[in-house]
Amino acid sequence: MKVTVIGTGYVGLVTGACLAEMGNHVVCLDVDEAKIRLLNDGGIPIHEPGLQDLVQRNAAAGRLQFTTDAASAVAHGTLQFIGVGTPPDEDGSADLQYVLAAARSIGQHMTDYKVIVDKSTVPVGTADKVRETVRAVLDRRGLSDLGFAVVSNPEFLKEGAAVEDCMRPDRIILGADDERAILLMRALYTPFMRNHDRLHLMDLRSAEFTKYAANAMLATRISFMNELARLAERVGADIEMVRRGIGSDPRIGTHFLYPGTGYGGSCFPKDVKALIRTGEENDVELEILRSVERVNERQKQVLVDKAVARFGANLSGRTFALWGLAFKPNTDDMREAPSRVIIAELLARGARVQAYDPIATDEARRVLQGMERLSFCANAHEALAGADALLVVTEWKEFRNPDFEFIKQSLAQPVILDGRNLYDPALMRSLGIEYQGIGRGAARAPR
Ligand SMILES: NC(=O)c1ccc[n+]([C@@H]2O[C@H](COP(=O)([O-])OP(=O)(O)OC[C@H]3O[C@@H](n4cnc5c(N)ncnc54)[C@H](O)[C@@H]3O)[C@@H](O)[C@H]2O)c1
Image (cartoon, rainbow, N blue to C red; front, side, top):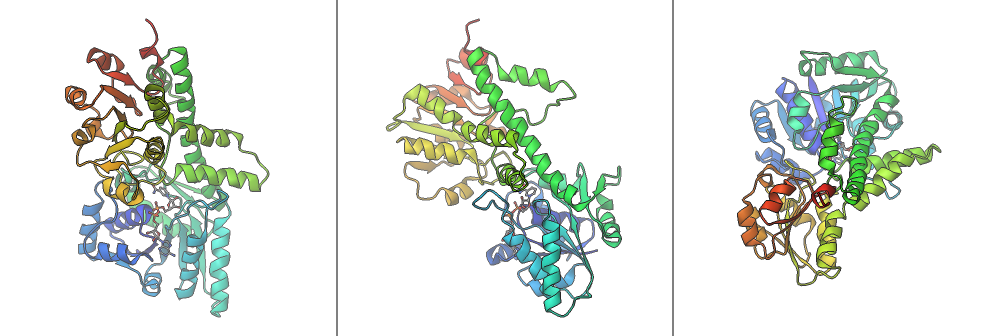
């Protein structure tokens, strides 16, 4: 099938490449000329396991093309995916300017029937706005009879496993009310669900809502555990024991129960905010989600609080080694990463920070440029040299079983503040390392 993907970011590029892998002819359109140039030169703008091979293979086969030319891109696809960003507006609502610009672009250049697929995360009712936008442009062009359908097909891929998620989706949510569009969308996705039919067909508004509900639920689980972790520390319980204890209940399950330094990334923070805003606009106070957000903001400070409790409020003259900058492992995405809050707060208190991340250092350098007393290190060991404590912020695999003797020797004092509960408090004690995790009260309580 012929597919156009508008927006070549995490979602658009991965979607385009995976659709091309199944034999579709895909044209990816972006307004970012540097990004398109890089892709046409065989480069890749983001870190995502397996993506480079997939893009290069399909580009070489002629099934995947990149352009900034809206006219030819829109002319190409019967299916027009919109995968542009929907960042938060000042009031927390999703900013639809890029989605509606893409819709206008489709309206300006289409000359035959199109299925317009909203893949970006957009508030309930956006499909109607996209439809009105396209219709208005067509009316102005004197093409009021030109047919098109708008469908909602929110994306559920996880950064760091995006290709895998896209090739083997848990579910495909399709909001649609146009028979021809449903047929085409089903045909497009059939190769991705050869074992089971994973397509959930529903009305457009329910599909749009489903995406927000999913992210809000996951964010809620994280904040719930972070809140309980605070209490566990006070009452002398170990939240890791509690996590296993409750996770083994199939009604609860094990996923997204990890306490840490708070959720970040490009989705949870903005989607929780946008859903709260949708609630306000409709006179429904989403009290749980307000608390989820508040708990998360506080949690981003948790390692700084521990550093202050240990070293005092004035941290000038102190140096901290920081392992992990990306908001989660296997990505270079720094959007809303807790590391940003932690670094800013440590620097504001006068400390030096020696940071290391296996993949996100370049991106971190870009977004954190100009910060005094912050240096980026070439490897995990270099970051430790002479530091007063090691702060573990992102749970990259290479941090999970480090050389603790080396850590001890390299640090000025053997202190680890572990924001991801990677290490065993008993082992740390036996090695003579002063250790604090998140919610690990039992490790400190008298036995
Ligand atoms: N990143 C994720 O993990 C993820 C997962 C699921 C859903 N989503 C949602 O998908 C959407 C895209 O997210 P992303 O992370 O891929 O964003 P991104 O910022 O990585 O990419 C967006 C791209 O769209 C381009 N763009 C903006 N306006 C354009 C226009 N008018 N025409 C062509 N290109 C244009 C930008 O230049 C950019 O390259 C968002 O709504 C997001 O909430 C993201």
